[in-house]
Length: 80
Image (cartoon, rainbow, N blue to C red; front, side):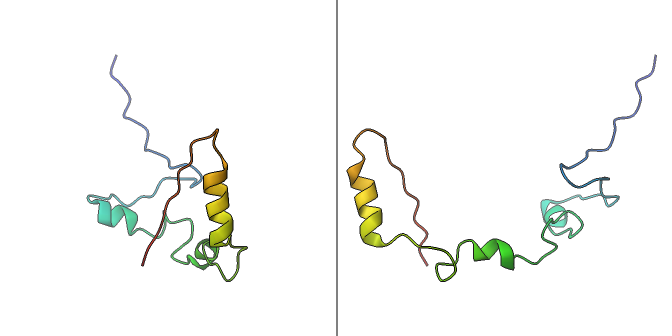
């Protein structure tokens, strides 16, 4: 018995798969049909804006980092 052709890959939360065939990563990630933000990332970037969100002061961050002796601590730093 012959095998049926494979079903098209469906991305989570995107309904029907895109009809465009992507031959490169650039074309895949450049496809606005697959972008849940549709190219508008303002709401996403506001989460990282210290003027909008409550920011931990450097002193409080230091106290949190050195005060916990029982749990290992890891911090990520983004620099410009």
